[in-house]
Length: 156
Image (cartoon, rainbow, N blue to C red):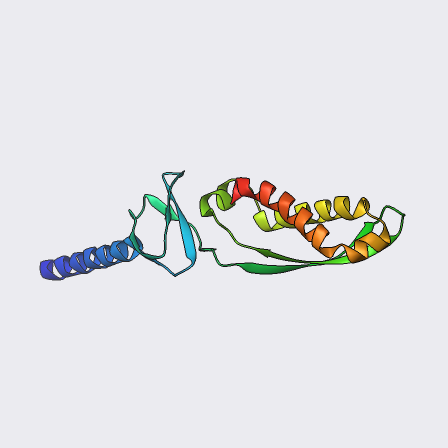
């Protein structure tokens, strides 16, 4: 009877040890990153490859994709300088450069980028008449890129 109790305790200890080792080893795929909090505070960002964390103390957050991504937004109505409404389709290419800032500096970076793009687009196109809007795609793109790069540099 006593031997079976030791056997059960040994199996439980072995399972706990295996579970702890599995939780300690994290593999991050190429072009991805994961943020780690230790006791509720940001500790570090796991880079691609094999990493070891302290189980039960470190909390590892989901993967953040560092590859260039494409997002298409629904057409936005924009009023030109000569009071004409134009529907503008927006396709945005972006890449997360700082996983810590993208996760901690803003609640939802994709929504923020969308709103910033729409606001800037309305501002830029609103200062042009219809003819200039239709022929100035490169000018609009460069102004948009400048504003977006400045604003998003703060949060990754």
